[in-house]
Length: 468
Image (cartoon, rainbow, N blue to C red; front, side):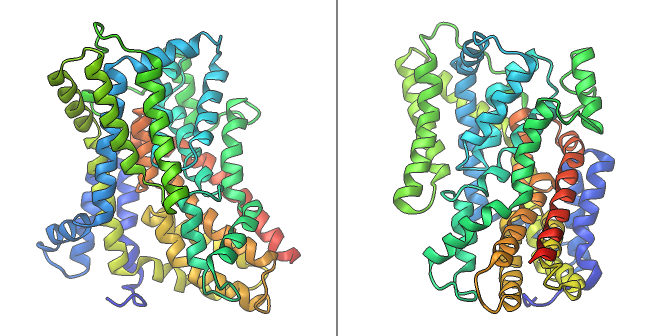
């Protein structure tokens, strides 16, 4: 199918089925599989269309990258568990006389600190402080919310991330933007206009400090955790295998917090940030591979048997398989949405509404709908930026004005909204994985907060548009 075509309203059927079934059945894998199967039948591909879809969508470099990234992250977390690094970190932090609120603030600040990767951030935050939040009876849903809201929303606000480079790259050649330097300048100037990302990050702090009280399903989850001590609801299905969560520390090993926790963390951050500065692209997967190898070598020198190290690494890989399976079907559904022209249909159905005053708000809403339906922010950026930015320039006499900054920010913020709270989103899946939370419980408790922020953002964009 040509990129400019779509199948009409039927093109949104698979994503709609996946989202509705996920909330009804609480089983993400089943929901995604059914959505993909119905989608290929709707396209007329027949029964063989389903395995063909999986083969074509998963046999790609992008899926291989996230598959390896997940596996190496699983190995590093397993090594953290086996060496007692997370336990030792928990004991070290406990000496700081923390309270329930302060523990959550630690997670909030950690998420903002690890800004360079929306993949690493939720996994690192969730797995690192999960022991502490469990001790202070913080629900896994709240931990997943903290980890998720400091991943993509933070990454899109920092000019030295892959997000910034990608968005800036999409702007080159549009209007008077002729090179990467000009494009990055536009991105930097758009940051103050990215109201959704800014408010989403701020909302976490306000909720933790109870300036904004818990509401909706999150309030019930927190009440359950505090009054009954149940960080997970009865019958919940944590998105992390027992092979990983049940790993016990190797008590006879001479392990320490510096070599077994901080060294791997510094390696990941150093390699990712260093490759971004030196090569223009953060090599996150390679960073985790390096950290896993170094951690394994350190463990051997500390007296842990080689077979034990390999068994631990294998357990780590098994532990992340639930997330990998969901990611696989999410990739397949995303490919199906592309083949059916889902995003194109949504754009055509709404583009007649666009006026200069409404452009920022409608751009944000359209990008949010596309991202929520497809579960991909970067795909939304790639679709919306070439459409919204030229429109903005046509309304601004081909000059770089605040309308341009607001429109670019609206695309970025709308994309992050979908990536932030869609059950199909990879970063939301990773947040559930890091927090060992039931994935649908995480989505149900987070969506009300995200919707409040999205509504405020839409109102702000409307005011911005009317004032320009």
